[in-house]
Image 1 (tube, helix red, strand yellow):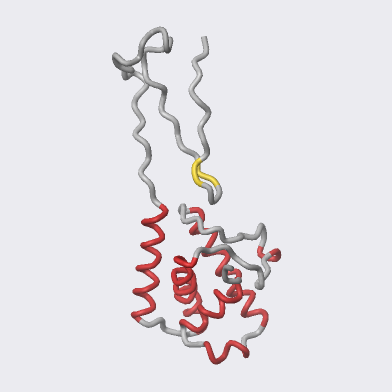
Image 2 (tube, rainbow, N blue to C red):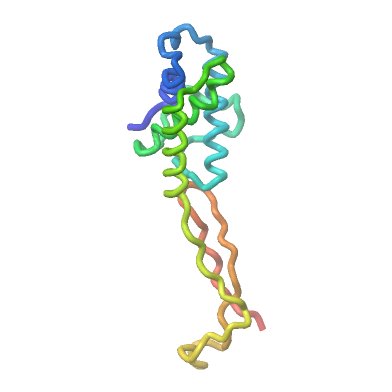
Amino acid sequence: MGWTKRQFVVQAFEEIGLASYVFDLTPEQLQAALRRLDSMMSSWNAQGIRLSYPIPSSPQDSDIDQETDVPDSAWEAVYTNLGVRLAPGYGKTVSVDTKAVARNTYNILLQRATAPLEQQLPRTMPAGSGNKPWRWDDPYVAPPVDPVLTGPEGPLQPIPYMRTY
């Protein structure tokens, strides 16, 4: 069972020292923090860090009590980085320890999200002696394919190269 968006927001407020004031926060402040959380997670998604976080189509569609499917290995990265983003708006200075944890956990997420691209050979490179003419009609390697990334499942499967005559 994953954390709800509210749990991430409350934990971020606790990280910046506003834990005892959580019940004094207005619904507007919680919604503002939720928008910051949604914004942070959508920017991470654009960078390739896909955590199965339900990103709303508009800020009005976001539900603070919605459960997320963020893996437990990323919880600390989410709430510490959210705390770092929220602190200036509340006049708080983030501790050096919190900043270090936020940076380290974010770097770990980046490391897990990155994958080396496949080497793309030029279209003019011969396929080699293993390319027998009765198997293929083209003596050259297939042209380079640009990978397209989408959603939490990763790269789309490219359409196989088909030669047109």
